Length: 84
Image (cartoon, rainbow, N blue to C red; front, side, top):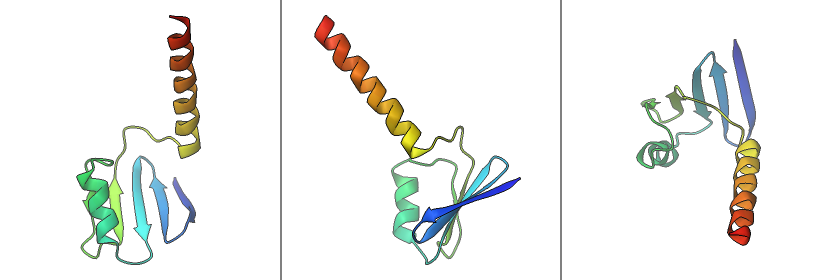
């Protein structure tokens, strides 16, 4: 099953089973290399024209879900700090 997420300007993310592809409208070598060099994504294949990044993630989570978990964790840390 293929799903596409395109609410990002200048690129879209395509999910095909457990393989993800980020397709850029224009060649984006700086973005592609930053995803690899910062180890945000591992096991990445970058197309020769720098318009695609292909990767197989261990898990996928929406940014808003990640931020919710982060905020929840920070509240727990604050409460634990105040009570100890």
